[in-house]
Image (cartoon, rainbow, N blue to C red; front, top):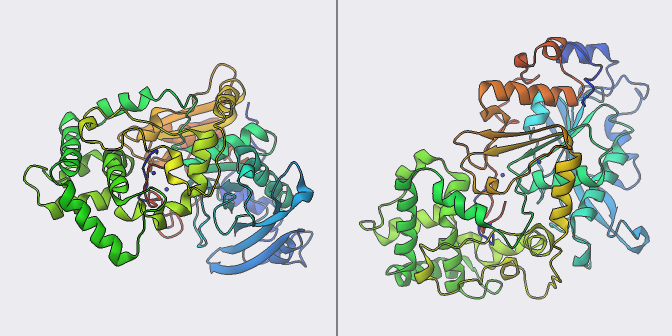
Length: 489
């Protein structure tokens, strides 16, 4: 997922018919539109031409990658799926094409889409194709003029549904939805609104804020995460930065912002931005760091101003709180303040030093010219109820030390083939590969089964499950997607 975090924040299985190994499964099918050529019933048509024959699909660019075809595309979407005649916009997607005989993974970060080839963990596991979708209202996938009332979880799920429907005639094998953090939330919402589209979902580190007014789970998390020594060390830096060092450090911040052309119109002032980033410091640390990284936290009482400033910058990121860092993420904050919810921490250890208690809500990070309207308290309750009673072929993976996992998805008695895994000691970068050996095999086996490519040996003994492709250091880079912070999932 990235330097992110402020808060107000800063995803009855019938085992598929494709038995044998990945190579055997591929060999059993006609070599349909493989990355190296075409030999399907449409053998005379290049895969690019087939994709561009889809109404509303256009090519931005094609980039080469060994063994694949990689396309950056635009797809015409209705601004309002309920009233498609009322205007359209261009939504950016990417397609990592392997072979139409392979399953397809549908990924979204919930934010912008990257435009360089990258294979997500489920894609590596199933040896498949991958479609990435840019979330609506993140530029350039923003309607003009922007009607912000059309930015909601149902409209976004309907974007995914239309893309799936458009590509399904080409990629006819199994589909799995996936995403990290807000992308994991997005995969879950998509499954709730269009449960017949996907054959499974794999959601990573996805928060589930059912009741936005009740955030005690986050307070309990910060009372127990890691070790007391590490927690106290982080608090000491925060208190030092908000207390006697505030003047010196805000002066450094102003000097940097002036040199960079940074402004503070959205948050309101440099001092408010500074208080926000210091308040986020502990959250940002646990989101992106490991317990062992506590060694790098300065000892507040003896550290120089520069050492504390550098630590705040490395973990929270001064650039995340200026207008230029906040405004690209306005669509997220808008959703947090209208449907998703956002964590509010008590932070009693800092209360006597805060000048703006209660100020930092999602509205503080959305430009004033964007109206937000009333918060929909039923949106997340509906999702949570659906997960507990209806989730099928679904998986959520969390990190033990990731704050966003304090409020998580929990399948209930009505769910089937639904699983929650927690990676010990992991942060916001938790994944299947980081699970214990037995859970890693269990999770991998379920993903292979949902994708219809579980080898016969794995069908008989799930403990033998492993990814169908070898690790590619460039294509499978699974580092945490740190983006400018400000409490965001």
